Image (cartoon, rainbow, N blue to C red; front, side, top):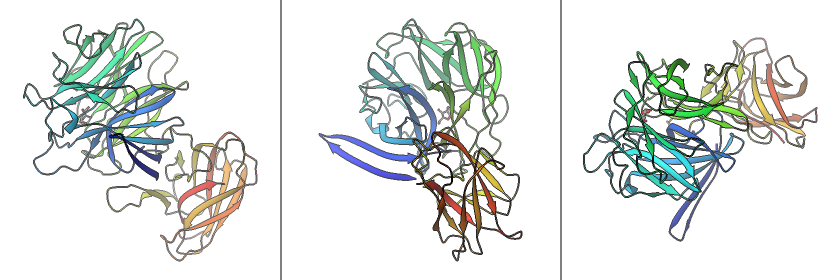
Length: 450
Ligand code: FUB
């Protein structure tokens, strides 16, 4: 999935850029957690923390988190990894081997980008202090301020600037969530932190506030019992009090305790960014994901169900990872992880039986240049046919690719057939798998329209 990797060292500044084609999880070559997404300069930027495998004696609460990266995209499918924005070794006031760089946030004010992050202070004045780094571009380079924000002790900073220009810093700290006003310099408090009122009991962290139609939505991971669900409260003042409105993403029940999120509107659609441990199955090695988020007519956040497909709109000419499907038929097909080691992660469509299908939504055929369908497939036995349809498994047939035996379930070959329709713009596709009544037909790695 990593199409290219460039590393340039120019005048001592290190610029790094690596491109990624993403469904869910968004990043498969490293572990990324606590994603804060922001819209800057008409693109979505994500600032996640990074999880690494812990060496004995390092990190805490099982997490080993040395740094932050930044990723950007305009179609939410093709992401650029701009590399590390802040590393623990860059923080003048932080422990250089603390591995405690927990959830961050970023915001722009008057052309300066402010990056807020927790770190373990050298002066042992708290579990975490919150520092700020600044840059003139959302990608950096960021310069870390000499000291942490005085008067704040806690984790998971989140910053919101209201329409009147007043900035607010939200943060967590041992079950409670707090808010303080920030001065316009964005690095000093303008009021003492106060506990947010109106929230339900039990552990809460990861505050994220946004405003929609004049309503302040205060969202947070909450653990009423067991792992964290994503919940929210609403109010008419960024300082609160808020009224608890319930949960909008259920808690994980497969061995990961945390979830951590951000919510952003981009091109008239709201999106939820969050994390899970799908690649590693280790709750301390997480991967960021995203799905669309909707409000009902009364402004209530609708429950978000995690998908493999995610939020991007890939070009038809890309290698479409259809194992990151939008919908899978009830039986006769699976999407299995193929990577033996932890990273990079990859999946394939497999255990395919006659009559099964999958849908893969939102493929951009642009001006209609694609003339043929290409399928990367492997088949121990006789193969079969991949029928490509528009809109669903009963939709118009736009091509049929015959797959023959390749001599092994991992012996990949590219098969192709003409694309029968001149497609322009964005289409939802369906792939229907046909072949012998008995047995498995083929595996598929990717599909592309050239
Ligand atoms: O990633 C470390 C911590 O776990 C975050 O700061 C919390 O919000 C939780 O996700």
